[in-house]
Amino acid sequence: DAGITQSPRHKVTETGTPVTLRCHQTENHRYMYWYRQDPGHGLRLIHYSYGVKDTDKGEVSDGYSVSRSKTEDFLLTLESATSSQTSVYFCAISASGGGSGGYTFGSGTRLTVV
Amino acid sequence: GENVEQHPSTLSVQEGDSAVIKCTYSDSASNYFPWYKQELGKRPQLIIDIRSNVGEKKDQRIAVTLNKTAKHFSLHITETQPEDSAVYFCAARTYMDSNYQLIWGAGTKLIIKP
Image (cartoon, rainbow over the protein chains, first blue to last red):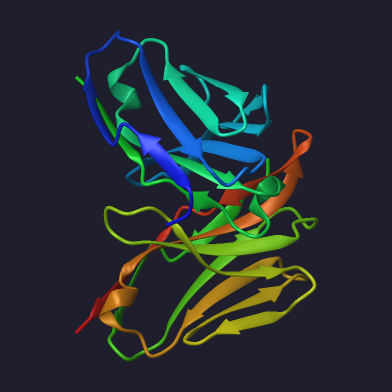
C-alpha cells in the first residue's frame, strides 16, 4: 500500500500519562493530518501540518500537541491522557492542500485510556 | 463555519439495487469533492472525486454528480454487491485559516441485504 505507517497500532494507557503517536511517510508529501474517529462523529481534524515545523490546529485540538521536525514524520502527543481521548486515530497525507487529488490514510491507532 | 451535511446516516438496499448518498456544502467557493469508503476496521480510502468544473464523473459502478448552484453532490452506486457494504464519507475542499482543508460529512453506513 501507499507509504504511510502509524505506530503503535494499539495502545492502552492510564489516565494522566503522556502518549505519543507516530506517523511516518515515504511519499515526500507536504501535508500531513491527524484525525480522530469516534462512533457518531465521523472524522474530526485534530492538527495538521503544511510543512516542516509548520502546523496548525483543527476543530478538536484541545489536549493535543504535534510536532514535525522532518518531512516524513508527524507526531501527535497527548500530554496527559484522559478517558475522552479513547479513540481511533488516523494520520493522512496529501501532496496538495485540502487533499485535492486525495488523502492517503494510515491504518490507524486504537488508543484506550483507562 | 463551513459545513458539509450528509444524508442518510444509514442506507439499507437490496443486493443488485442502486444506492444514492447525498451531501450539501455551505462554501460556494469549494472546488473539490472526494468520496471515501471505509470498510469495517479499515482505513478510509478514496473511491472517486470530482472537481467544480465538472458536473458528473463515472468509474464503473460508481458515479458522482455535482450541482454547484444548489451546492450539493451525490454518490451513486449501481448494481450493489455485498462488498459495497461500508461507511461512505463525502468531503468538500474549502479555504480557511490560510490553508485549504477538507470539511467532512458525518458518514453514511451502507448495508447491502442479500
